[in-house]
Length: 319
Image (cartoon, helix red, strand yellow):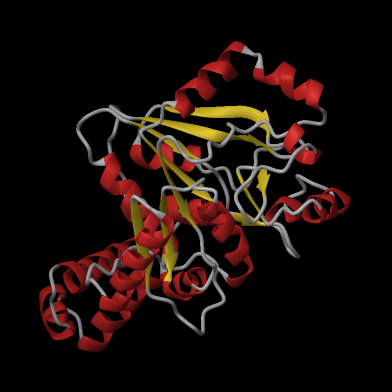
């Protein structure tokens, strides 16, 4: 990767200063121009540059009444310990925006604890996006542990592995799961899980104080299929058996019951409890995931949910 020129580095430093003055210190663009000794137009461009280069990450802290109302209704309907509903952008095609930022904030809040805790993490696009939103922190007192293997079917590191990104951002001891998400056979799974280092990671994950997971759907465009963890025939067999969603590879039906046999015989991830014995927070949004999220909530696989208002309204329609 080419190194930035000195002039580009200086410009990014000016952009960072302008972004801080605008979003954190609350200065107007005229005040920024005066403090930096530039024109108002230059100050405006520097603020825009800070956003385009992601030097500034904005979070909305104002409680929006409708989102709060929806969150309370979901908590009551599904007996949730925690629920956060963020605003939805009807024009956006993103499957993570808003929810990823809220998940990062929830994770950051727990990482700020001075008392040591164990945080377990699943994988997937939403948690990966949340990990990218975390600010640099120094958390040597905590332990970050993975629920799911970090090895893709071709032997490479999984692109949506989350634990390493989180651990790098917060400088905390981390415990990855050096396994494939789904083993090639039940016998291979048994052999892999019998390894002493793996047994230690599984035990640590089961004792986690809080767990964050994504929720995947099993229809067209299912992440497990897109990422090569299951074949199209295996996906069809799961859907035929009644599967509507998956969490860390474990497929479940509309009532949140685990599918018997099929790929669930070979999933090497930490098994889910239903109902969850400790706080498990699901972070998910997107129309395709409605049945999957509803199933996870019906089976009480989740004790917490972070989603957007569009999904919240859809979930409240389920019987």
